[in-house]
Length: 163
Image 1: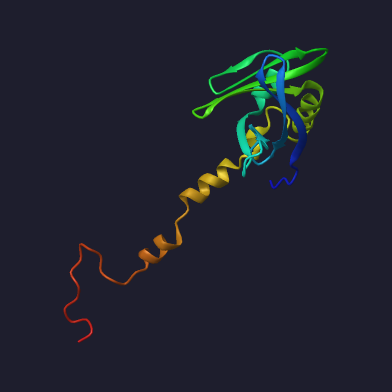
Image 2: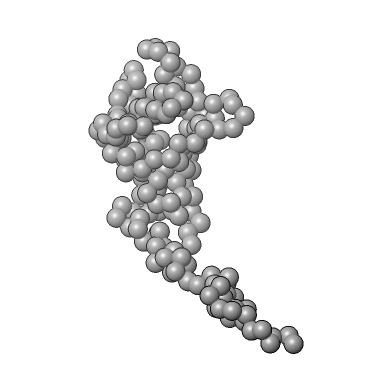
């Protein structure tokens, strides 16, 4: 089931440095039907390479409505002045970041991902049976070994061979 639809949305998120002090961070939200349980959020933070976080789509969906998550990724709705935002707290060994994303565009992007792969149908996209069949199929090297006329380690070579 090859699905070429990639759902992307570019947004400016606010990196909260302290109360009332933020900087804008260009961000790309990406959803790939081939990775149906995950969302990929790439932050362009002015370094030579962007930083990408991957976490559960379900976590982000729930976080639009109520606080959720624990550990490395926590998400919750809030107000920034008069506008609704989705807060994301990200923690890694390199540090912590609190980001605010505008609620409406995030919710609209999530809705698009849910239309592409409805909740409860994610497993159908994983092709688990094909993956297992590929793992269990004999490899070309195994087939070569099966037909190898050379003696195995437990067999003595024929002394008359080649004479």
